[in-house]
Image 1 (cartoon, rainbow, N blue to C red):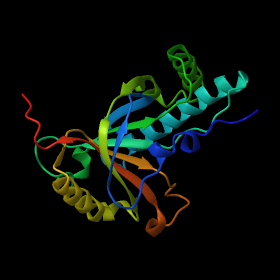
Image 2: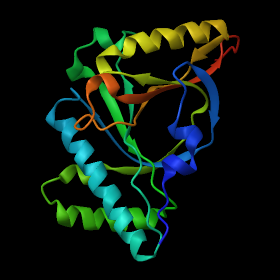
Image 3: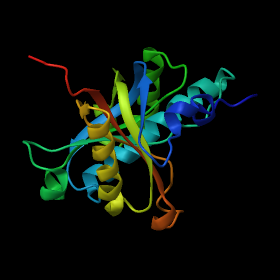
Amino acid sequence: MEKLDLAKTYKSYYTAPTKPQLIEFEPIWYVMIQGQGDPDGIAFSNATEALYTLSYSIKGIYKKEEKDFTVAKLEGLWWVDGDRKALDVPREEWHWKLLIRPNYVRAESVEEARSIAMTKKKELTVISDIKYETLHEGACVQMLHVGPYAAEPDSLKKIEHFLAEHRQKIRGLHHEIYLSDPRKVEPSKMKTILRYPVQSAEVVTG
């Protein structure tokens, strides 16, 4: 049985250069869960475990249909209230939405997998909070950040400079795709795609 790997099938989505680039994405379906708090906290940990538990339950359903796939990389959307920069806000106040792209999945399969996951992990009640929704970011700027998460501001400065040069402005949430497992890769070698939806700075809205 051939196993589908989205990272290989959709290389433009799961790869990026180490310098900013403009790229376009179509609407994409995800399983996702939203929360607030320190990414080192229990709420974030539970949400991550719940999302993976559901994703592997979906995988199990499709494997029986001989449509096996590799569970895709974890992703995160991040924001804070007001106009403050995230690093100026206590981590406990950060908002996040964690996402994983499933493969050739039907909505009814997600609900079937949810029942399976909740049976396996009765204590992980946040599985019930996971949604199956589409996200359409359209035109985006992205780049590959190599190094610890704490060093991301250096890459974000490059993105800001790129946007100014290309007369673009951010119109959506800070999006990260975690290509490395921090439990297995040393911080200096971790790889994370940083992405933002953008639009022309000359576009007048409202």
